[in-house]
Amino acid sequence: MLVLGIETSTPQASVAIGSEQGVVASALVSRGASYNEFLLPAIGFCLDQAGIGYRNLGAVAVDVGPGLFAGMRVGVATAKALAQALSVPIVGITSLDLLAYDVRYASKTICAVLDARRNEVFDAFYRTSPGGVQRMTDYRVEKPGQLAIGIASRPEEVLMVGSGALLYRDAFEDLGTVVEVGGMAHAFPEAKSLVELSLPRLFREDFDPPDQLVPLYLRRSAAPIKWETIRGTKSA
Amino acid sequence: MEVGEPIPTSWEIAPGADALTLEDPLARKKPLSEWTEDSLVLGIETSCDETSAAVVKGGREILSNVIVSQGELHGEYGGIVPEIAARQHVEALTPVIREALFRADVTFWDLDGVAATLGPGLIGSLLVGVAEGKSIAAVLDIPFVGVNHLEGHVYSNLLAHKDAEFPAVCLIISGGHTLLVHALGHGDYEVLGSTIDDAAGEAFDKVARFLGLDYPGGPEIDRLSLLGDGNAIRFPRAMVDEPGFDVSYSGLKTAVINYVRNAQSRGEQVSVEDVAASFQQAVVDIQVTKTMAAALHAGVDRVFLCGGVAANSGLRQGLAEACESRMLKLFVPPMELCTDNAAMIAACGTAMFKRGLRHDLDASPDPNLSLA
Ligand SMILES: [Zn+2]
Image (tube, rainbow over all chains, first blue to last red; front, side, top):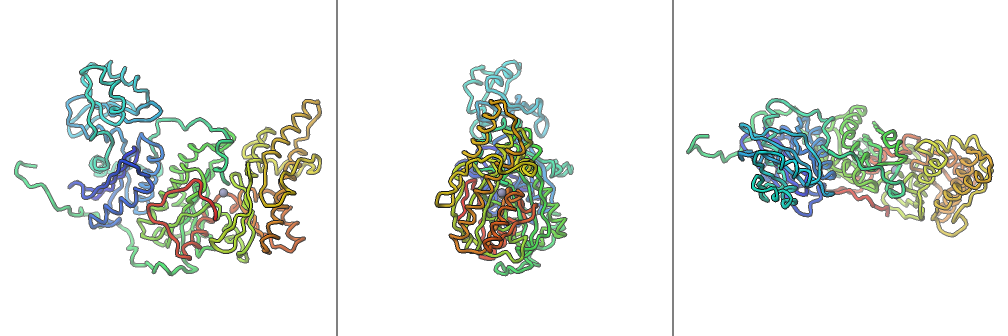
């Protein structure tokens, strides 16, 4: 089954098309990407280069975050509309699961950390298990300092991956040798992993109900803004 | 994989991938230039707090127009919360599109084009509609066009009335916009004037909130006005005697607030009905005066009233009387086309397709998109 993977929940955006035999095409941009400008042309490029069309796609997989709100919304909305128009199933996978899955060969506890801006991070802990990873904690949004305290309280060695780990590495590396911070190659989730990780769920027919698939915000919607500040943008 | 076993290098399309039960879109594909009275366009509108999808035939016949309003979600805040609006669109749009196709009794493969609101509006809301509209167009290999929301409002009149034509002077009046436009033809607009501060609908909502009325305040003021005397209090009509077609509402809002506070400080009983009626009368006087002057200036004999505040009974009546005495023909859309809706976007999009316009799949929303 050919799966289209869509990942736009971070400053990096990527798409990939692949099956159980591997990835047939992918495109990625990390700089200056407007998700709406990148996404459909990139999918079209991948389809063209692989010599296939939309109707060859058997499923859509999408990164549902946590991450940047605008990116998550464009990604999830695009994935839902493509799946709807194609009448194919959709699977949503979290950005932190993708990050952890990428380093599943490490024999340590994995902490996936993404920069959440506003001096906060999104994170979750994983242990490696045969063929993948197993999440041990809830998805959280917290200050890097709080996460550092959480890590210090653990007896085992921890591998931290993701843009949040890189951005606040000083805070984590101060904890001593129990913490290793992963490299740049694992800073962001990628659509290639998304395709790979979605396949077992697709074969199990563990689809997401498309109407209920929403981004994983982890934050309540911002406090009500003052009426005056949205002048010129409300319409009716 | 065993040691020495070759890594697969050719990627076959997996069995089953071709067995999708989709009709072949190429089988019924028409040449792009052939836009007829039977062409079907899917419209998508997500510029503010209404999630809407519609199917319009030939640009003038509404086959379906599904609108999900988020009013209750925002009511407790007394205004639109952009983040709440954006989240709702992501949840609601896919089922709303499905419902619009169902009610029109068509499938995706019957569509000839997709039109979605490109702006102006809330960026977080706009990008959901643009992303979904482009995705559907890409899958079906049909053209996509991004529509100016204000131009869409103008088309609500063309949808509702078979005899509505350009040129016309259009009063686009809503919670976010108040402008007078000379529409010379399809896609050919001259903005004659606009509010220099608050939109009219915004003034309604602010005054309603000050008077302790429920959100949205416009309909409440309209209701109370019928019980009060519009000439009881003489509120100022800013800029009404000045040349040009701009209007201002922040002074009027302040005058209402000051009047009520002063009366209360003197211990006088304030009639909420009279305040509401007198405020509404001031708005109607301002807009009717400016609209009539604009029609005279533009030399047209048609006036289009459009936008959410077009639902206001005082404004409808005031404009109807003024137009009748000047031999102008007034067009007012039915209530369901006054508020934000996707049918007007589909109608406007169809007119754009007919002129050969379309957007590429890298189109992005523009929250400050202007008309003309
Ligand atoms: Zn509007």
